[in-house]
Amino acid sequence: MSTITIPLPDEDFQFLSDWTQQQGTTVAEFFAREVRNLRQHLQAPLHPDLKRATGILVPDLEGESAHLDHLDRKHA
Image (tube, rainbow, N blue to C red; front, side, top):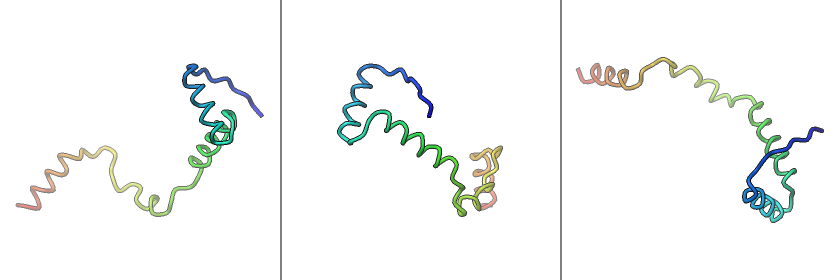
């Protein structure tokens, strides 16, 4: 297991310490849980609906001009 040191302003550390105590945990357990949740979230596969939608929007498309062109064609 690795250990890190995170500099925090005293006021923020006191708040975090008080809050985690109220939650029945510790500052270290809080950070460990949050990092684990982040890792699991980022490593999870995309939902199939989201995967299907990937690529619908072209990254270099200029939205406003494309919309105005569409309106011109629609109302021509």
